[in-house]
Image (cartoon, rainbow, N blue to C red):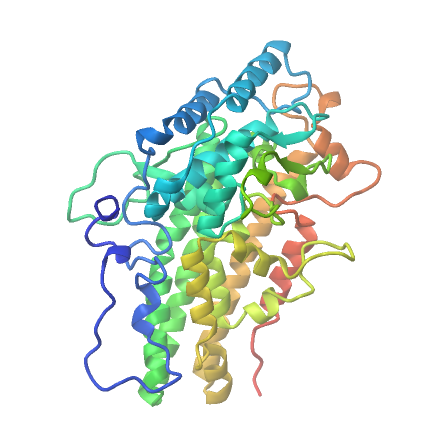
Length: 472
């Protein structure tokens, strides 16, 4: 495993031994904000510093092969209007081969976090290919050769058995060309994806725009660490330094906003909405509201039927959650009222629920950050320093503007295309999910994470703005 990660990856390094007197009880060890406990790298943040494993060992080659076949044959969405019969036959032929696979044991995968991540990636992509190539009126029954190992791998990783942001973005990239040893950080323009549903540049650019945000956000993580160090000192000089660091943090968040909006340069909104986005859907964004049945689960008494089956979502980005928590905005943006649903049975706050879809080390990082006994917002409100308050507000405003940009992307990539015909088909042949979302019943548009998308994003954006401090 170490050879896969590289000798300088944090998962392979011992914890740092700190010189000096023991740290007082209750004071956070900020040096571990990028330590191996959390799998956060000082160079690449929440993304691994080396390209993720591209293929499992030969024991599990049949999984890799069946995923290759799905991509090579360009399986089509099963609910595509007027889908030709030969496409339906091709999809069913592939699904029949999935059902005939041998049920492979995952015992030897358990020795390696890297293997488990790759297994989750491969099996979750097969799962979505299988489900979304089905006819729209078919029951969703996932066959045991996929359901059993996916449930078992997911249990080991403490992740839901469904495609997530980490499968699409964090662990779905490789280098176009090898980089020199003195360039340890992947170049933003030197990335390509390992796995795609459609094989289009549009889909690849959609994932890579998020990857570029993650890599650029490393500078924000560095600033958070030095701010926490200064907060521990707490004197007047420290307050002046924190003020400048917060202004720098605001600038970085605005860079993230620019990258987010740049997705428009390489991803066509109509292609995204009609041909890419439907592959992401989880059980709670299925227009037909069909349950997912994991056949064969009874063969392993340790397995439980999954309760979390939302699709991948930008709400699963640990970087954005980190900004929320560090700035103290999470008490607003993660409000219990922001469940993403108007239903009386809605679960807990959507953004809190999305943390269940993050790699467990990253969840630990967020918990560690939340437990900071000297939260930044409390320092700002307790300082009576106008310059510090203004700098803090600038950072919060930048985060609000980042969420404004997300609203722009939603308008251009989801709301707009939902009212237009799919490229190459007649107006009368809108996707069936469009009619559900925008028919006479005026039902709310669903996000891939299952939210009532527009209302939810407006709520998070407005709550973020509500965190701006006013002079006392």
